[in-house]
Image (cartoon, rainbow, N blue to C red; front, side):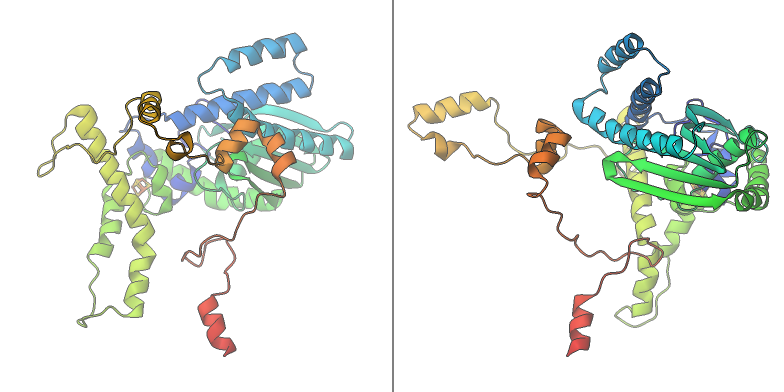
Length: 387
Ligand code: SF4
């Protein structure tokens, strides 16, 4: 979902303002970033909306073609982008058909504006796809980014949209359950959560409302954590800095080597510290490059670069004229999987190569226990136990 015009207490920022209510007013001191990724996401939503509306019969063919032609001229349009959008469109159509099969007069809404201001002052947002069948309300959300997979489980953004939909439709329908699905086509991620309306309303009254009241007044406690990553003041926020600097200030025991407990202490904070460090580097660099800011003790230099041919055709010509064979100077290799998918199209790729592509197990990574991925058997420990 995209909030075309952002609410101050936006649903997409809710994980942040619910954990750190005063961040809302502090953010107003810094200009909103409108990244290329965000613009691309808005474009992908427009493309998806057009296709779904056409499927629903809300547009005539001539109108659809005219709009599509316009969108195809946009610099964000590409065959690859359209293929990812199509994954979402196909999923949405499947959901629409399922809803119609279960209830003849199922309600379908595309890009629908929600108002959740009963719990959050001036709270509104836009739902990508909303379906109402009997007692079930279903919300589907397209997320076009390719950063990290987002889970729908307990997702505050999805829940706020669900509240908006409940507020709007409770007098018309007897909704008892809400289903919320996030589709991230570029990450092959589809995540669904379900909640009873009664439980959702309890959460809204007990958790959302008090936090929103603090946030709108700029009150409450600052709290840093993963939610800082999308906060506009993340570079200069003192609470975040102090939290991350605690790791550097840890007081260890006198012994020469760290104990296991001390290593665990360092591990706990290291991901956030790394993210914080790169945010600070990016912030200082951008200020220096874009605004000519001089940071005492630092300077801008030329980074490392690698050699490259000035003109590949001229290089080949020179070598062939010098008597070198073509197979000596050219390397022949298959395109990478991503490049191949792009070159021949996702559908052809699937049709021709589905049995010839494998996904080996990922390299083990050490993550905090709360991580949603299941634990794998530690081979060294397992081998040891078997002996
Ligand atoms: S950076 Fe983090 S701690 Fe600071 S205001 Fe933003 S969310 Fe709160």
